[in-house]
Image (cartoon, rainbow, N blue to C red; front, side, top):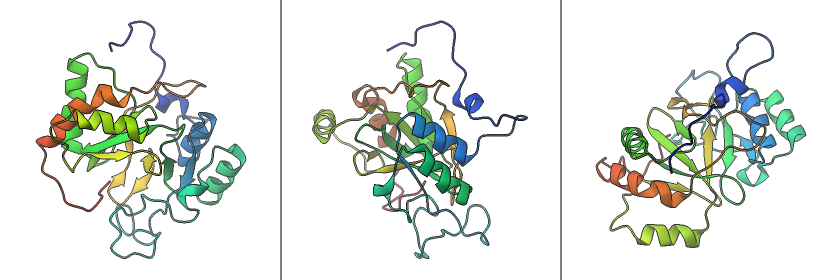
Length: 229
């Protein structure tokens, strides 16, 4: 699907600005925007204050595979779109990562190693396929897609000869960390940010992206079972 030419809306980075000056978006800004879009969010575990950026999850697990980048307290099931609750959470923990609960009526996502993600995005754009928002970290890129059922995902994957283990699916019961959240792998950013607006951003169907993502993942060695972000 080709993007229709015309006036482009400003990217999300311009929407998520403080009213005074040009300060970058905060986690509270992102969390409130998600709540308005009816994307349920919950604070992530975050990093230990004494560890510095890129080190040490605040959770009890010393070998946490995704430092800071997962729910802890409250748990994922507490994710909400209630603006008052969201504001209270991040006013009390302003440095907490923003964790999106995927699936249901919320976006789903497909994630793959960063190098493969860059290749897949280049292929999609070269072929005129419109990607939705893309979240990037130092190790992995995540492509947001419209909500899908397990049945639809099964049908899509059944058409593939082979699906690399490095390609992961964030659907019902899953989660994704959103920019500008700090994690053990560094701060998460938008590689392709949602367009600004009062309504939730447009999202592509999973079947329009999966071929390119599978092909790109197949040429990238699997990093193993540890879920790096």
